[in-house]
Image (cartoon, rainbow, N blue to C red; front, side, top):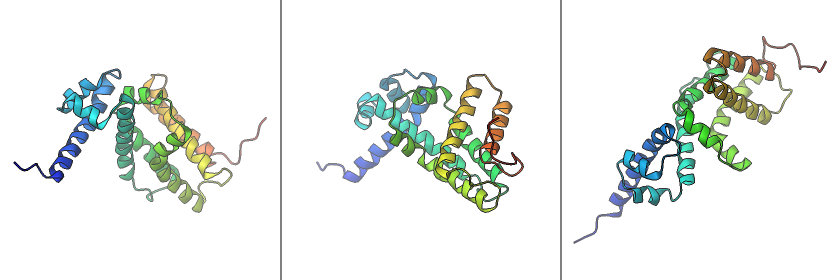
Length: 204
């Protein structure tokens, strides 16, 4: 009897991996301490299949992080980066990404507690950072944003503020509206955007 062609085996492996990554965020958000067996059951595969793709829980979490990032980036790509004032576009961009990530609030808290190197953290946020940088550069070209601070610094600060707004909202310390207002005000002042502060803040 002839063996199945390698192409079919690769296709089956691809479908299994996709099923695992579809199920894992739901399972781990409902129970961050759930084991790989629970993920296997939800994905409709065996535990051995999960281990074949992800030999450790940490590797599965890293892959899940990439999947959630992909969903957030897809939502951000649906935003027209060239329509309207740059400050408004930046807020729409962040809100789109946060809405996508908001599907897994418990899981993201678990992932955020994992130790990662600075380089791994930069790599993880690279696709998001690229889109933010594009809006910042457009805002500078149109005169909406000043150029007092390096773009790389602003990108990192904006990502951090976006995470902070989500954390404050998820913890119940701020309402959705209050968190969004605080984020917008912080971004406006950070970039000294038109209509914001009249100049760089001076210590008193």
